Amino acid sequence: MAIDKLKILNSIPVVETSASGGELEYVLIENNDSNFEKMKQLGIIGIEINDHLSDDGETIDISSLAFTYTKAKWFEPDVDPHGVWLDYVPDHAPDWAK
Image (cartoon, rainbow, N blue to C red; front, side, top):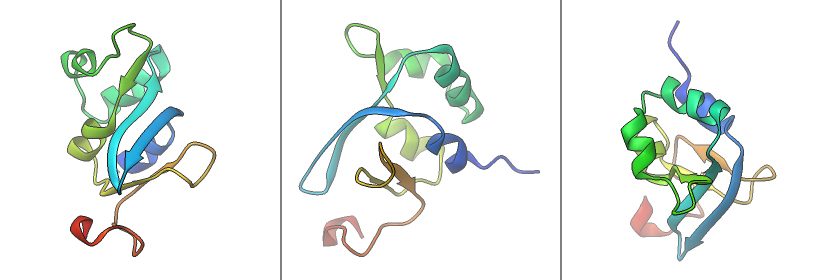
């Protein structure tokens, strides 16, 4: 059975996001063992995770990793309490994103 990477990605709690003009700037998750294990399930190796750590080491910016390692095409910050990754670009996205 194939791993549903988007489902795993969406199971990682997001602590903070930023987007401007439809462009995703960052999506931060906590740097903890549970999230690290989920990222490994997505195929992300430790060195890549470390490259995306915040200066204080408490959070990880997974925005570019999500697009690289899953079928995510868009992050919708206003869905669910902390946003959701989508495998399509919604109609309300800017034209340049479609």
